Amino acid sequence: MSSGTGLTAGAAALGRSGAPILEARNLTKRYRLGNRDVDALRGVSLSVRRGEFVALMGPSGSGKSTLLQLLGGLDRPTEGEVVLDGEVVSHLSDGQATRLRREKTGFVFQFFNLIPLLDVYENVALPFTIAGVDPRRGDAAARIHEVLELVDLLGRERNRPSQLSAGEQQRVALARALVGKPAILLADEPTGNLDYATGGEILDELWRSCDELGQTIVLVTHDARAAAHADRVLVVGDGRIRDEIVLGRRANRDARPLIDRLAQLGL
Ligand SMILES: Nc1ncnc2c1ncn2[C@@H]1O[C@H](COP(=O)(O)OP(=O)(O)O)[C@@H](O)[C@H]1O
Ligand SMILES: [Mg+2]
Image (tube, rainbow, N blue to C red; front, side):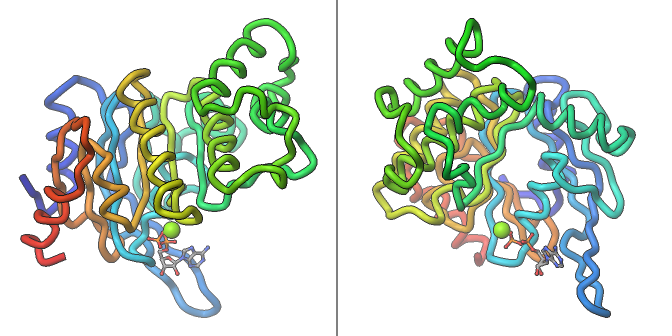
């Protein structure tokens, strides 16, 4: 099934399970670059339902990262609205928006953004530390243990990032993003800096967190193999959503059906 607009993509998601956990309504984003305007987004509407794994796929410069930043409240749109778990982000003050983002979202980026002077435990504990919660006690300590187990890093708590492989560093970043049980995990090219096999492991971990724990995920990628882990792929081009490809939840995450659909669409 394909559609020309994000609006239809949103309607399809809505039909399956009531209120979406994340919605974009006619988002535009215009950057000022020197004395020139860049229209990074030209009217994007989409909807993600709870527990869904959605990939935003498109070429470099198509607006994927801009869209993810708006969805996660890291930046504000020029026009349009983001609704995150029932809250219209543009109606909030900067302080309220920051609080909502900290409570509801976890981010993973291409470059792992770990703090070099902190060890694995301290990096994963950062969201608790920022919130003024002692990460060595009680529920916080139990949750940190749980996510370190999930990403298979128990026993590495005292290592600094420089003492880890790239794949292990990205697993630390993933654990940190998940530790606060975010309503939504937002990942921007999380395998872009990893070799093929290691990237595959990270994608499998993302997929398992969705399939086993019900984690909602929005993954940005230019790579069809990565996007094939999603239930649904929104194809981004030139600041718009060009098509929707529904793959469904598949244990094998085979990229072939997606590649075939993209070829049919001339992409
Ligand atoms: N901070 C910025 N200032 C000016 N232009 C930007 C900025 N961020 C992104 N852009 C431009 O917006 C467009 C979309 O960028 P981006 O969202 O990063 O695309 P993608 O993630 O798909 O590669 C590109 O033309 C890019 O150069
Ligand atoms: Mg990008």
